[in-house]
Length: 400
Figure 1 (cartoon, one colour):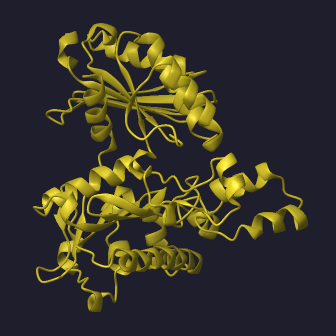
Figure 2: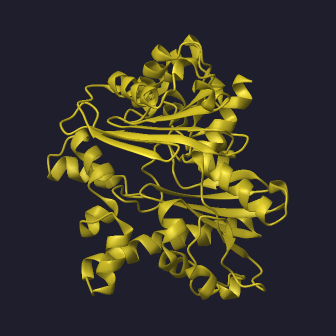
Figure 3: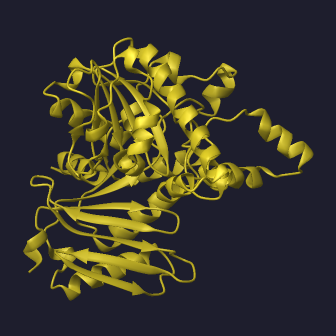
């Protein structure tokens, strides 16, 4: 039965305490298997594994990522699939930060691995976890080509005026401080898919892409090439997110250190894990927030307005930067499913050529769709992202 996944790609996204994976055929886009191991190295670890219609959930001790990968292989074996002998075409690994070293998907060699280690200081919460996944999978599948697909790659050639901070140039150069941008795999996939859906080549249109999930980012894409993006040197900058502040006065760091006696580690946790929507109203699930707003909850309403204000600010800025906007595209969990967010973020922009059709906006679908009116000069779309498919295609292209 091993041949049932022959030619497919194993896509791996390793977090600090999680392992998300998917096996798919990049040619047919068929998802053959996927799963999620959570709380790795912690109490209460578990795994959810789905393979061709059969789902398994287990609460089991997972002391490290190696144990999680071994369990995944075991679960496949229970279905009669020997992963090591199954004919996988490649393994595609999501790596968050490529720094100034990696501008495209790259075959993982020892030299490449060493370079990912070297630049891990740019993403200390992400790259080490990604490396753990690379090592764990490579140990079990040493003969399958492994390819790193970098979140920053799509934004690696931002123009100088958007890439550089107004910081001492020598300090910035010495410590590799600049805007790198993130969610690049999603922004690239969605912008290309949107252009295709509208019947254009990406090079022919200007787009604003809004990747709105627990992590959120926006990009201004001119003729298929990124011109600007909201996330910066780290994924903290930009839009208000589920637990992250987004844009914040850097002086607040100094203030908290002086008057609250908070350490850098304390402030790091505050900004990344205890802020954003959760910090404002105690909740980062958008469905729950919208329910609380409907019930008249003031904290949830205030959080929503703060979120919208930041989002609208960037939409307006990008409309001016691009000069001509042909499409505004929503994607990711909130962007794809929260109709009120789409409507409210573009409300009152009719004079700028953005006209939402309320009935179209209310439709829920897993397919790309236009939610603007037929006579809206700017097309507004919802395009579901598929980072796993994008990674799989990139891995096959490199490994092939």
